Length: 363
Ligand code: HEM
Image 1: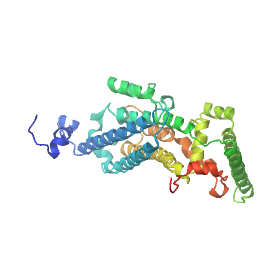
Image 2: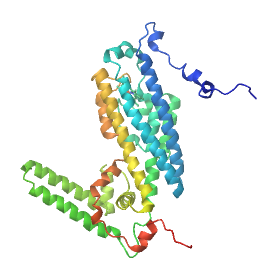
Image 3: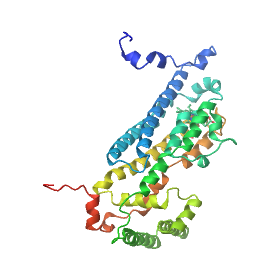
Image 4: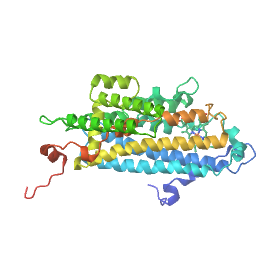
């Protein structure tokens, strides 16, 4: 037993935490004021990454298995609320670093080579646990991303590629969406009619739009051919698989239909939490894209188009990752097939009952 009283400092291990800022410039005999900020901001990021991973791991745990407990869904949504608030902070935090000028940065930048944020193992773990595919990554150099990490980190990150990601688990969960088809009611046939009307309405509007020149009209109509093609594929297994092969879709056809049903009938009590969850995934994805964009703009104003300390093309590499590194794009894309509430096919009474929270007096 220790008789040392717990204090604020000892509980938070502040002696270790606050003793972890070693300035390279000081070591080299010429302290640079802004290097302290540079270290602290990166450390703060890593702490928040740790918290995100803590939340994410608990969500992954709840999604494993063949059945997601209904009462867990509320907790999952709360955990994502927290992740999203942290992400917002991560985006705005960049503003603090922007108070450092490029010239001040140059005072110590060379001392950092060859270290780089590219070697953040926790950042890679977040990406992998969300569901980033290694083959979808923008490569720099001819090496895979984990080759830039030290051996222990590289192993941990590779292991996370093998584990079930949030994307995979959600896909399975969505594929299990009940209510997609009932014996006496095929929802999709009624829905198809409503979407075809909506698409046809847009095509008529494009043709009638006198503001469009020939070229714009031609391109818009072509775009609608694409929409029709992907929409038809929603109901045709082979066409859908073709879209997946071409890289236009990642989520399975069955899961996509499940997600679409949730989006369309979000007002039904039982679908409200699943709908919030799908919206959160879109937020998580977009906030990472916002972070990537904000970070690349920071990099551009700090070092222009010079190469990074990690050896990449710098801004050009980061710009490509902001465009391409997204996991839940298919969920946002569902909006293409959303129809107005007024056009939604009426659900049979029996199904509505199942989708509602039922409370019967005296029972
Ligand atoms: C002066 C400030 C910064 C500069 C000039 C900078 C520069 C760069 C560059 C050029 C890269 C590409 C890899 C390379 O060649 O090094 C990179 C990647 C990265 N940086 Fe920064 N960075 C800065 C601040 C930050 C901060 C505050 C974080 C917070 C953790 C961060 C996290 C990352 C991450 C995670 C990557 C990998 C991104 C990816 O591969 O998708 N950086 N950074």
